Image 1 (cartoon, one colour):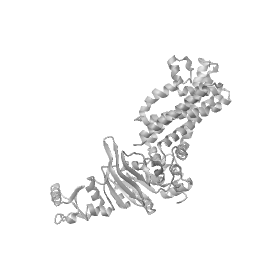
Image 2: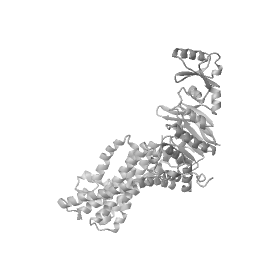
Image 3: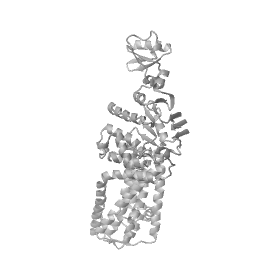
Image 4: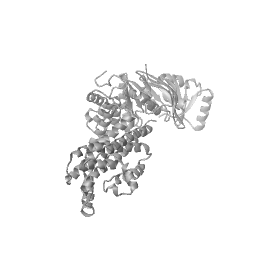
Length: 295
Length: 266
């Protein structure tokens, strides 16, 4: 059974089509990274899955529940970690968790809170108000709050957006532990590295639909080849090299002050000696497919 | 499945008690952090009003109204003032802040709670709080010489039902306005007039005919009459007054849910 099944889902906001014929299936037990630039429709997709947005058309099933009719029951088995910190800042860490344990009808609230405190590594701070915690602790608490009822499916909406690298790494460790337990995860992100490190499969979303999907290595092999050559130099030289590469059917994308020739193993004699040749990456795929610069 | 995990799936119903209790438990947890200030102002405000209007006016201008000492007339009327200010305003501002600034409702609606349960819980909590604080002016008036009566035991119920209606009104307004400063219009157009023509400070039968008619559809006026009924003796019309308040609460409940659903669900 697929944990998530979306068929030809459309969601518009006035003249804007946020989700445009989206097909997405997430099998149980995997972590799927929904990778896309800002405005690709990732957050709208997340809201459709929680019943906080209603699709104009299409079929949505989550954990075998039909949405939006059975959205409340589906949410009972789901955990959601939002992009924005919406903890109750004046309330203690423990109470923040207990409130959600009650909302999820957990039979033993005390045990659930203890377990979630363990996940967040916040046992020592359980009686402190949230506004006394550091940014990293708050994000860990937010994650633990979404797991307090041991959900079968977890939606992570840009879980590390705006965080500094150290906190991001902490959260990646926690998400890694969640994956290891076999929980199904759908994680929206626009961070390439996050998708690469955590996701079993990546679905690239652009303009409201999935434009490519596969394991990171498969996507790289399919769309970017083996190597990428970054060529540096004056604009005239770069323009010349780019034109030549494109005339040979190679993909070229801007890479800061350089241009990147993707699939450079096929660029016989074109890559200058001073170019930096590296393994092709998911970032190359992302930029080629979406035309957007990656974070 | 471990000891803490979610129970075996079943289809969740409308207006589940667990969802409403869960949302209210959040309010209680927050209230524990600010109850002292709220309680202080709830006691001080009627005290100040009673000193200013009750003692001040009764010593200089008004001795009694319809045979009731003026301080007791104002004190029993002040219950309605306490109710509207502890229900309509907190529900307006609280709902707006939780939705727009704190994103609290996004978190709650990602759990197995729907808008109907969310709004119901918010209204019940505000009404419970307001029903309690609404009784403070009556207690203060008793301290100023009002004789306790058995009928007063119904005052918390009257306050609760009225506050339920005004909290629904507040939630609906919060879901309707675009910006927080638009509450100035709501206050000026609805809250203040309702408060002034409730019969708290002067009997409404001295007002022009039009205002007297308007006062009859003012829930606060009905509450004032019920509270005075509890203090000085009920009449049969009080049953109709109470039914009116129940209808007011039921209507604002449904309107609040409708408006919040429009606001919260895309």
